[in-house]
Length: 144
Image 1 (spheres, rainbow, N blue to C red):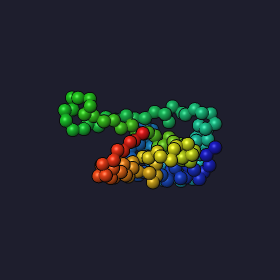
Image 2 (cartoon, rainbow, N blue to C red):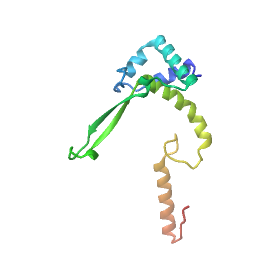
Image 3 (cartoon, rainbow, N blue to C red):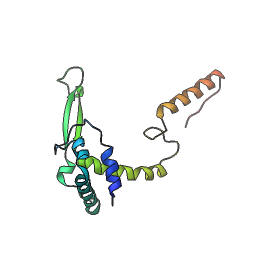
């Protein structure tokens, strides 16, 4: 079960200025709610983990389409943004923080992007340098 420290960490990680979800609760409201809000979020998170069921308002998100450049009569010239409830974001952050250490144990050391300290751009640069060195010395390079 989540503890209050996990809830505090998740609440403090909410970014300011984000739009509210379907429940109209902003991240700033959650952060300003104080101890009572933290206790309620802890209760909600524990209930979700005990029962495995999320309340319907916590699973709904507000999908908004935003226009991009070009002919706005074409669907491909729009992108969508999904506004998730901030209390749900707290629960999702608690779950994510618990899964990260477990994922690090499973993921191969060679796995690049989306991991701290393992940039995909850096790996691509290293491969390019290797390719240039092999071409310079007119040697074959094989990648598997």
